[in-house]
Image (cartoon, rainbow, N blue to C red; front, side):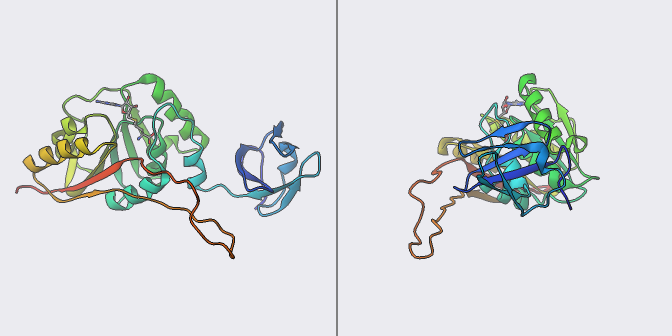
Length: 255
Ligand SMILES: C[S@@+](CC[C@H](N)C(=O)[O-])C[C@H]1O[C@@H](n2cnc3c(N)ncnc32)[C@H](O)[C@@H]1O
């Protein structure tokens, strides 16, 4: 399939830098060279295109990973390394109804919207209207707005929804919403929480113990990238050492 106007594409420069760009009638500038994006219309992914000064650009298909790394950010976001595990643990897939509190910039919202398919829904609470505007923009970019119900509400005690397939909390004091999450979840389904510090984990565990939750897990996901020279394979010098701790628990009817 050929590239069309308004498609999003990745342009990779010869030194391996990736740029996520929308194909439209405008010139795109990089440290290497510039390129008129309109020239990409009708080209095929995988082709090499040349800039004005003759520099090579590889024309690549963006994946959800690329969109997540390039979301417009107004808050701390959840990174793909954590999102992958969250989606699997929460069982997010086609037709699911998922609730999250703390939409922030919408990185997780976008990934969940992608996974629930056309018939699923993501219900996303966010207290700050200005952040919701960013979430809306990020969703429009990937054409997933239809799958998300955004609620500009500061949740204090409970959610409006019942019988949802999964709940995820990303806010400063998530323990205040553990009871609300239990009320909203379908029995047997999973609550997920992300917190940046260990004392927040303790607070969450103390409250989780008080409610009928089982299968409690606390996990941290570390990703170490390697240099790709086949003669000198070794880890990259720098890594993202810390993002957050993940907590999961399954709702049961009684304990
Ligand atoms: C770290 S950000 C979430 C980032 C988001 N998960 C992402 O991947 O982009 C936390 C958000 O929770 C929101 N928040 C905090 N307490 C809240 C509450 N009680 N109800 C709704 N939103 C809340 C904050 O305004 C903030 O935008």
